[in-house]
Image (tube, rainbow, N blue to C red; front, side, top):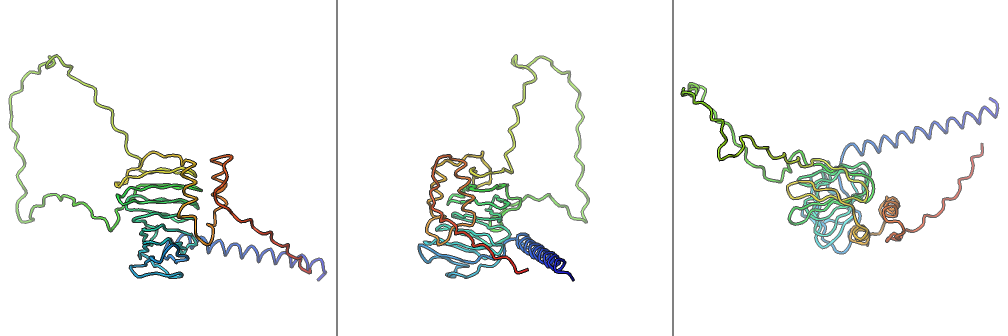
Length: 297
């Protein structure tokens, strides 16, 4: 085989190998994303020690399995889901591992393609960073820092929540005869009086129907949404510069040993929303990657 043919063959072989590796990696990431959240690993605990998995005190690298509960007291925690998504819990928060990250109380930050939910809503995402909050009264709030979130009312109630009793139709025993049909009484017809009573018009316009409450809302970067304890969605609001800066300087960003993977995307959104305002988080510059020497063929 000629040297030029050998070089061409090696180039094609390397290209095919790289393509195969890329496809395998994409399939692996897709499979992880599709299987939902089944595990949450504790990656960091700060400000205290009160982080629990099923009421057992947790430490770094402990894993919460499907349907297990992660609770924080006087501490904050960073978790990594089995899908690779990073999540952070503020103090006094309760999270249950499931197909979505179900927040019962407190504040949760999600960085990546992982749905968050409460007892009344689901926040469906496609790769994003958002904050989900549930206060003591059950009021909820979703804030999108980067990407897009679709907030919709929960179709099925939370199993932990009591369900209202549904009245049942009266049942008759099989051996008993069916109940008698109602009798009608024949009465003579009286002529209609066409005169309006009290000089009021016979027909009055009916009130305009009340518009139905929204069941789904799309939130874009820099937008927030309030949800009442019953799951009723309010109007979309813009996140003010002061609120955005407060989040970036608050408990979900400050004090952790590593930055969120999408911090540069969050900075781009911030600078686009508030031109001329400095981003309040210092991001270290990424060192340049040395050039790879060419192969000897």
